[in-house]
Image (cartoon, rainbow, N blue to C red):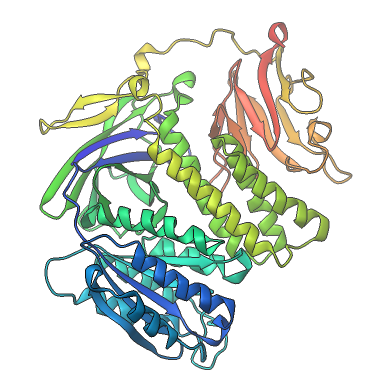
Length: 576
């Protein structure tokens, strides 16, 4: 196995509040011989699946059988109030289409949707297989409306999601399949099951689209070389800890971060495939009190996958040099934005509050612009437009959410196949202390190499110039000791009113969006908890949180600020 790593940006050596940094870890496993895998199609046969839904489910089973490789095996189960095996686990060569059709004809919708015991049933079925361990996939075909044993909506989904967590412990990926339009199933539930079951939410609007989708899914399952990998992260300083982790490419999945045990934080990575890189992200929190500038090792990570191991030691640059603080690793930063995008979408799809949904859609739109995804931006704007016009999302909101998820999935797949951006400039091969080879921050500037900004920024001449807005070229002075930026209202006073710079069809700047202040000759920007966030040179400014003050970012001539849909550039009088 080969590892490479990079931080999204340097850190400050001292800060009044904890700082966060994002560590990208890429894992590549050499090509391994193709092995067969087991597929279990679990069909929802409850009353809500009557009519076209059950017909589409039967067709999905036929397509699954036709998409298998020569070494694969297939089982088909159905569930409603009870679950039953319709086709036992059978090698693909022994499957007979007429026997499958006969078995599928016996599936008759009726009863409740007891998804939890059905998932437990197929998990046990696949966990106790004979022979060598094989990768396994469960295709869950359901409308995503689980019920209790009385037929009422399942109020507490946590046991269901906990069961999905348990799939990964026995090397099984849970892949919910949505058939038809987005309004034929519950996107939020299926997406959550996929995330927790380390699978992928698959959507096929037309039955003929499902064959290619399943073939690609099974090919990936056959490339699994290690059913369960673990990353043990050891903090090399008491002020460092892992806050969250995810798999971001080639498919997104949130990862469970266990409490530290003896100074080591174990992270279950799930399966590893051979033949392509799998990219993980770790959000690291530091105390912000390191005091001394320079590059130092802050954590050590040890990857365990079967009998194979690999290690890395990650050095993080701590610098007070303003220009160095804003230097970003383009690849790691883009993956971090993709992580935020996936998280915002999950929250938006689960939200029942139109106001909260609107806030999240604004963040999705802004993040989609930053990451360069027109499909995500268009989907978010369509949902925002409907929300503004009607005050709520209509009956086709689920279809819109599904379209947005599909666009994000395509984006993440594209990120996973792109060559590392700037790998020759930002990352290089570095000798590890154990004599192995890892990827480290190669061209990240050292503190001693820092240079002053080419144009000194002085309070008397500093200005903000509009670079994206309705009045491109207009400038605003920054000569006040404190300048508040936002949108004015009868009850809200701001120093820079961006209302006239907004797009004509929506507001993206918050009433009190950000503040710029002069402190000891330095021009500092802080986000005031804005809805869309504040971006400086492509890097989000941390928003204030409970018990944590807003973090300040120092500004310099040439810096680009993005507040909602309005882009501003820091200038001096001579360069405005």
